[in-house]
Image (cartoon, rainbow, N blue to C red):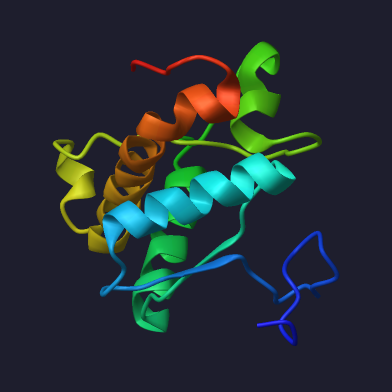
Length: 134
């Protein structure tokens, strides 16, 4: 709707491009995100998650940080992963690791990122000028 401007196009800090929820259709989600990336170079997703799940995920990541499990990416690839000027630490999440079993929200988020990559793969030639195969 015209009265809900999108990020980068007059939208405020709470604006978003695509609402993602349990009833989202994957094919349409991939097409909408790809179109947004092609048009603006970025896409802000608003995901419908329970606040308790998010709080648990944040607590889990803080605990991992306290145990020294988070790290910075190599300088050569950090911008590609985190965006221009992005700073932060990351964790390569192994779903089979013993400490991952209790982190359902993190595992769901990790699976969602993989799903997004799969949804965008068919559009990668249009977006990047060549197909992304892995």
